[in-house]
Structure formats: C-alpha cells, structure tokens
Length: 596
Image 1: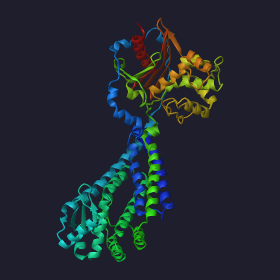
Image 2: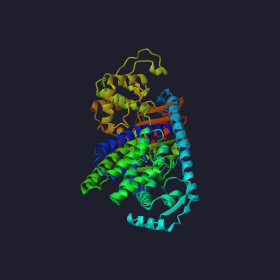
Image 3: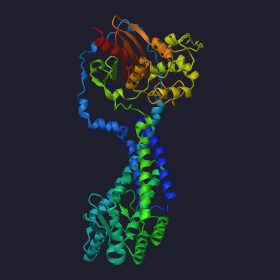
Image 4: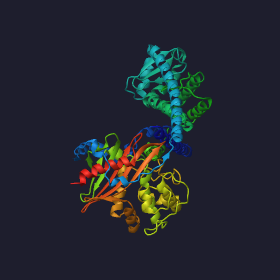
C-alpha cells in the first residue's frame, strides 16, 4: 500500500504542478481577452484532475468499459476443470530434481520504511486538515441552525424580485443571524442565504439589493458545491503548495465571475452601490476558512482588484464570448488528456492491459493450495490461451531470474556472446553458491541461475541498448531505473505472467526481433529434461526479500511429438513462494494435461 501511495504521491505532484503552470500561463497570456466566467471555469478541469490519482488507471481505458458492459459474455467462457488434491504436487519427479533455483536475498526494509513514513506523514497532515475543516463546517452548521427566517416583508419582496432577475426557480431560504458580520450563502442540497442582523436594519435598499443578487448568483453558479470540493482537495493535497495557490486563485476568480454576473444586471449608478456594499462588508468580514460557504470577504489586494473590475466593467461582446468558449474547450481537453498520467497505474505500471485478449478461463485452483498465484497456458495447435486467476495473471511483479532469458538474448543480439562462444571466466570473487564459483557459458549460467554472468552481460550490452531492446519486445514496464544489475531483482523492472507467456510464444515461434540463431541458442539452453511424452524447457525465478521467499516463477514450454505448450506459473506469499514451488505446481498441471 505504501509503495502504491508513493507512486500516486510523486506522479500527481509533478503533473499537478504542470497543470497549474499551464492554466496560469493561459490566464496570464489571455488575461484581457477572456470573460470573467471563463477565467473561473478554467479551474474546473484542474479540480476534476485532483481526483484522478484515486481512480484506477483502467477507468481511462475504453476496453475496460467495454468489458464491463459485456460482463455476461465473460461468465460464459468455458472452463478447464481439474480435480486434484494437494498430494498431486509432491514429490518432484526424478527428472526435475536437477533443476537449480538459486537466488539471493535483497533488502526491502529501507525503501519500504521510507514509503511507510511518507504515507504516515501525509495521513497525519490530512487528519489535521480534516479536523480543522470539520470544525469549521460544524461552526457554520450551528450558525445556520440558530438563525431565524427573515420576516421583514419589504426585504422579502425585494428578495423575490432578485430571484426573478436571476431566473432562479429553486426554493432558497433567507435567514438572519447575529453570529455573522457579512452575508453568506451556504448549502448545496438545501441552500440558504444568511444575512447579518445589522444588514436587515441598517443597509440601504440599493446596497441590500446588490448583496442579495451577489449571494443568489453564488448559489445559481453552484459555487458552494465547488467550494466543498475545494475543501476536500485541501485536505488531501495539504502538502502541495501549488494546489493551495490554485484553489485560492479559483476562489478569487469565483468572486470576480459572480461580480460580473451581478454587474451585468445593474446600471452605472447601481454599480456604485455595489462597490459601496463590497467595501462595507469586506472591512468587517467574518472569518469562515475551510468551509463550503461563499461570503463577501477577501484581502485588501483582492478588494482593490474587485473594485477596479467594478469601475471598468463592460459587458462581454459576442466575439469575447466565442473566443472564451474556444479557449476553455481547448484548455480543458489538454488538461484532461494529461490527467491520466497521475493514476497509480501510469506511475507504477502495475497492471497489464489484457482487455482485448481472447482466452479461456481455467480452474487450476486445486494445484495452488497454500499459495496465491496464477497459471497461464498456451496450446499452439489450438491457438488457445488458458488463464487461471486473471487478476494475478495481469499483475506486474519482479521477473527475478526469469529476466536472464532476455539478458542472454540481448547479449547475443549485440554480439557480446555468440551461440558458439558464450564462455565467460569467473573472476575469483567468492559467490554464495558453489556452482557459481567457476567459469560459465550461457547454458550453465541459465541452469544454475548465475547472477554474476548475466550482470556482466548487461554491463557489456549497456543500459541504453538494453532499454531499446526491452522496449522493442514490450518487456513489462521496461523500467531499468533500479540500477545496473539490480533492476530485475525485486526492484524497478516488472512483468506480468501473461506478458511472460506472450514473450515465450514469440520466442518459440522465433518472431522476436532477434536473429533466429540467437533464439535457437537460448531455447536450447533452457532445456531441462525429456520424458516419453514431452520435452521440458524452462527457467525458474525466486524473489527473496529480507530472507523470505515471496515471489516464485517457473516459465517455459513443453514440446510433444505434435504440439507445443507454453506456460507461466507465478506464486506470491510472505514466505516459501519459490521457483521450486512453482516448478512443482507446473509439473502437476502438465502431468495431468499431457500424460495419458
């Protein structure tokens, strides 16, 4: 959970900064040529984008929606029924006992601790902001409950006239309270306008009319709902100063847009009354921070800007309105196109999109007793894909030693080694396993899963060439940021079982972008054993974190006299989830499917 949060945290921080700069740049560049309403509306896509990091990445994928709408078709898929007890998994056949599943432990504590501390810090800040916002909400709620319905008939009549001017049909109550010094509008389900008592008794009719129009305009624009969403955003993004600045500017533009709507209904003489009312109430404004309340308040600088706006106000021409709409549409499209980059899926790339893939569901659950995992099987003759546990089959995890298949292919492709000459000399550095303490070739290095051999291959191939090669074959998330020789060991590089299978199908068919001799050399090096029924080729992989086996792989293919079956087994757990365990599961499944 903490590492997923970290992905959301960092990706959203960067993208939201970019979105803020885009909006601010547009507003500054076109400051005099856009309507006040559009200056305000430009913040709406930004406000929507704040929710994106908390949405699954699949929501942006049309294939996911198609699958959701056609979920009944999925339930009709055929199933491969099995029915074996856990005892079918043991013991290993004598042929498989020679498989070496060597792996070394990596430390996950430092990074996990950092992510956990980051999450706890964010949660603490969000809790404090949530408490402050809730206290402010309760305060205005108490003020609203203790307020009294307005009974002054002349003001009520004026209020009805203002509603007609703004073409408001929804019933909006107007109430009075001694607890506020400035008028305010609140609520979006049951909206209300709160007037200070002194405004009812002391305010001239002209100014009172301006105030009522202003508050009604806020409610007509649904500004209280937008303020409520802004308050939620401040809780979640308390750590992001540009989000706070954006929301502050949005509220300022909200007041300017509201002023413009009211000013369009007033004559030149009435605008003077509007400015006077604004001065009167801003000077003694009630402080209502962190609430969804729209009140006539602001800083001296903001007040000066609003007064200048009132002084220079002119109704928007048709040309300005048309240009404003075009700019709003283009800007909104740009912002919303950038928003999916903030999803956790976009940052961590933890899921493979298999929404367009045709497959048959397989029930291999009895083989996975005690483990959480998936199994993908491809029947070449039938051109049919079988998947057990689709959710885990598309989940990207570290490839661990199964990556060495493609490290070898890359080195062969670059001429670092050749099918006839893949020998590398051991440098004498003591290794954790005896079989690593000797010279190796590609075949022995794959069989013994020799880390130093493939690190040396990757060093000679070079990070730039490796990146290009992995991108060319679409290897998982293609992320090599974990460091030379480390990215495939429970680090940045991740791939799903389904992607592993697709790559192996291409390897078997020799359709990967490598020389056919290179692919044949790797396939030959993957040979494990043969029986009377089939020959087995494969590679194990085990992810060991803090001395616990947590990620077990067995990938490969079985060749019979007339067919080829490509498979990937992956298991996950807190411990004992090893490549050896994945081999046991695979052997049991293949035995049932292939052995008469």
